[in-house]
Length: 267
Ligand SMILES: NC(=O)C1=CN([C@@H]2O[C@H](COP(=O)(O)OP(=O)(O)OC[C@H]3O[C@@H](n4cnc5c(N)ncnc54)[C@H](O)[C@@H]3O)[C@@H](O)[C@H]2O)C=CC1
Ligand SMILES: O=C(O)[C@@H]1CCC=N1
Image (cartoon, rainbow, N blue to C red; front, side):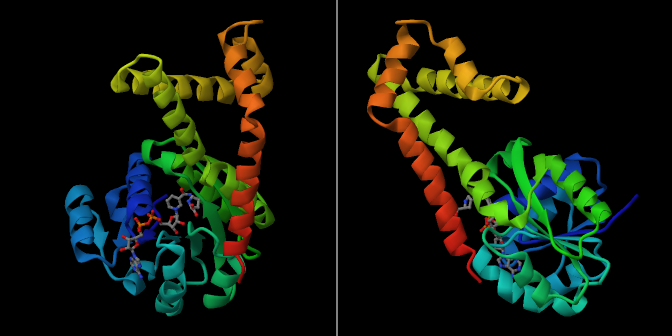
């Protein structure tokens, strides 16, 4: 069934969603974007053939409205669109730290709101979205949002109270993996590799290990043990990590991200 989808804010994540939704088979005529930067809007119109309008026009008659501006731009955007949002619309906010109640309070009563935390691997169709429905969002509307976001990766439904934890694990998580990659590449270079080879080895190792974890029923701990021969090379690395408190530091880092997310979400 054809549905009208408005994307408000077409930066990195907005374009990612636009491309993913088109890739899912939605005709371009179903989509409309609004974008504050004229040059950027023109670039996207040129690349995708998508309609570009202002915010108020984009949301008029839209079934689904995706808010993909930076968190600090959300309040003024909501003020701009409130009068044109239809009661039957579903509004999906991807802005970190903006509470569902803030969005509901700015829009007509009864509008379905969904809060979503994406991550950047959505750029390559391997994103992770944690989504939470507001009080007026029906099961059918939540399923529809989930199906739409699945164009960019996997979707899990969580209570909004868990969004700080989702942000700490999957929202910020790609940065932790890149941090590990930086270290693997640097260590590889120190051990004698050129940078390009070290990067290829590290990247494919992360892809392969992630796939193994995603597709296996084993715990991460068990999968790690399987790589680790007694007295072998992996054991030498893990013992060094443990001596330096690496796992504890990573756990503390994830908790610090969750705490910062909670701080940023204060109304
Ligand atoms: N978990 C994560 O790693 C990520 C989360 N996000 C979330 O997605 C949202 C967007 O982030 P990015 O795409 O990286 O930012 P971005 O800065 O690349 O894109 C935001 C776009 O919105 C436009 N904009 C600002 N105000 C506007 C308005 N009133 N009307 C129309 N357009 C407007 C800007 O010109 C810009 O192009 C953020 O709220 C962020 O929290 C985005 C990327 C990754
Ligand atoms: O670093 C941040 O605050 C945002 C939220 C999750 C990823 N980037």
